[in-house]
Length: 551
Image (cartoon, rainbow, N blue to C red; front, side, top):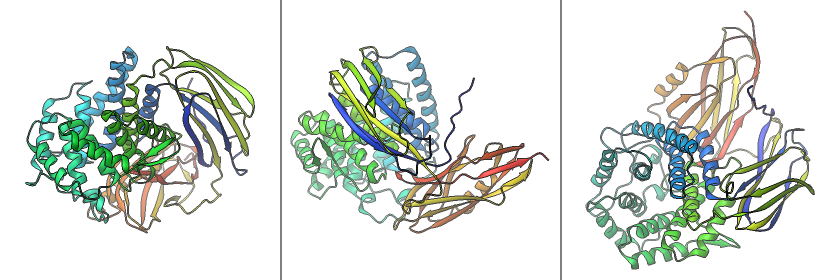
């Protein structure tokens, strides 16, 4: 028997509440009157321990595309973190060990294909290498080597390549290729930030050459500059990890603490853009995740670290991730570092009530308190207000998420989207073996450039995509400043396209063809567009009904 998920014919929407539970909490989830009847659900997820958080984050990242170096890294990294955590806490089972090992082995081999021949790594393995991306990869390879066999020569030559790029004054020049092209803000050219990130990567992976000391001297000379919050988080991690200058560490940590925003039981650090180009909420989560790691390692700001962890858990989305892959990785690293203070003794009883009716009771024990527990409620008011109460009687603090999922008709127009996409077909009825032409129109409605734009083109069931059309566009766009198709790959249900950027107001049209394989009546799989570094900037296209008759 095979299970098939039936998705309502409408635009999916989610409302999400996250938090930490010590006794009881109540949330009201409201679904609009226009919600599609019978399609609404409420999910309650319980996260008793850090492993439950990382496992859900790992599953979410594995569902994301994996066509570039960073995506491959970020879907491999949670497996590395999980395996390391389970080994340290002696929670490793043979089944989980085998699964994680398999993912890591595949990810490691794939990552090696992105190494540039002249040294370093780039998003798609083509020269020139990107120093920041290479530094991130270096830290990942080093962490991976703790749980999986990694060729030490890979780590050594990556360190040497980064060190060889250092300037005489101890700094590193900004990268000028790919996502940085046409950049107008200072974050892509902030030498202090770039130098701190690369020096942290080298120092954190055991590099013994003079580059780290030269970088430290440069950083100390230029620390009086007005550093943004993200740069301060990198500097703080660099200072704490090196541990060589206590006064320098104290100074940087104090600057970091002064840069926080605090409201109630939450604290966070906002960033306009991170070193790996994240913006929006993803940038704030990534920055706060880095800040938490520095504060926990420093060990003298437990209250602020606790409030920052509360902020991180509050920002988890309905899929179990934190927006971009980088934000998810840094959130998971922060949670795992915090877990070393011990949450394994959490135990007690949980009762979940929906609209005043007790719906589920659950007992947390030492045997199940590091697993994700999910409950789905369908008997709800799908076009009105629903109240979800969670009561916990026990020891420790229980992480939770309450999420409402509903669908609205495609005809219902919301606000003008920052990115928009539509897919039209030259006909909806055709015969077996006929070819139908689709046109995807993607537009950037933002007043600024959208970087690393991902386009998912749904492949209708029963059709073959003629990929030579996308290959032709990739070749024709190779010299374009924006709207350039860097790469595409294909699954059974979609083609995933990687564009370098879309300029402000730019519209791109793509024509591609499908061949009908056999008689069928279908709706096309969903097509969508989003910014890789800010997944909140997104849009989906309305599916189209197609009919193929026997020839």
